Length: 596
Ligand code: TSX
Ligand code: MN
Image (cartoon, rainbow, N blue to C red; front, side, top):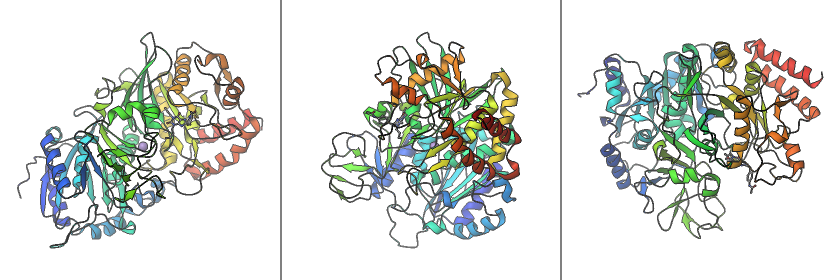
């Protein structure tokens, strides 16, 4: 077979994979619109994709009911030493894992086309970008990768004869025997699924799942797990962060990067439309930030993706009109409900619920049906370029200079609306101790407290203690040019279980305070946990929040915070001797400020 690829390593790898997986044919993707349309037409013909009458060039897919989310239990960081993967990752020794997976891969693409998908994370040619090549037997993966990354010939050209790339091998793990009828969403059973990362050789092997986070390997696998390990070696950062630009009435720009665990509304914040007159915001990214120190010593961020792969349920014109406008056309929907007039629907999309729909499993659904119409993790895949408030700098190869880091979580008690770190090390302590209460979106009991340091627990491709150290090292290099660090909690409740803070657009009031702190325009109240706003410095014009609610939102209850200490200690101890002393010191100082 003739492969039109000059890169020797790539050509060799494609041949090797073809010999291993024995596909019926091989197709190298060129990234063109015709290619996208041809694959979509093919999937419509096979009934895997359903065209939506109501949305131009948009399609609905239904996954297998067992293949609806990332599989953290089946996700591995495979380093020669278990300690290098650390306590937050599953680990199998590389030789053993490869042996197991090679057995699975042998003949796994029988009867299918093997797609070669050359992609760039970041603008092609940017010094911050990285090239990957995904080999997959899923046409659904190809069309999603077209939206989520930059795919095609320009990438092959950028690769040249000996350019470097991350090999990303993916199979749904469902070979077709002669004459066998294909299912609509082929995949392998749970015990055969593996999402494997070999960070020391920049290699990804994914088997058995067709679902986004397990199968679109540019995103979580390369963009976060492999990139975080590369970033540490090369002195940059790969973070689970949205990026936005906030513009004051005077036209001053502030760039914010923010990390939140799932179910905290990261995409909503990325697309915020400030409620304060004169303030505007632009979206740069909603999930991943790659950052490096520029020639001027400041930290510059790019969004390495080119699409949004967002959770649909809960998205509405009320909660995120910008997202709704982004979804008008050219969208891939997965596991949403199908309405009788040929549109998608999901829980929380509209006040009036359709009287009939086809649910995400393909069954008739009415409001009386026991289950949800859309799966809670139903997704949209949409081009970033369609976002009405996308920044003109979203694909600037140099990135944007970050002024502010925000960490956060969902806490109904204890944690105030916003506070600022005293300094970089204290900010790293805040990131390392970021916690969130579990919601229905998590497995296990609702309302449990979970530590999710820097929102990176599922995405750090190496020992998380070393990751904390990397953050401390970056601070040492950035010194007075380092972004200021804040912690927010939009989810504090009163005694009756009502949210105290209106959230959504009104969060711009909190962002404005951060900007005024940066500019030295306002003082802050020093408390044992950090620097809090004086009530009068939060712009609350036009809101009518009772003063006692505001006092509660900005209160620090010493005894409640003392009760957090044993949890933090326990959390830190899971990292053993690798936890940097500077974080233990932060904990000691915190205890001291709380009064012993
Ligand atoms: O995304 C959210 N954000 C960030 C917005 C920029 N959500 C949704 C979280 C689930 C993904 C929020 N939910 C936020 C928030 O700031 N705050 C809340 C809690 C809340 C929910 C409903 C109301 C208020 C707060 N409604 C009324 O007060 C009417
Ligand atoms: Mn994410």
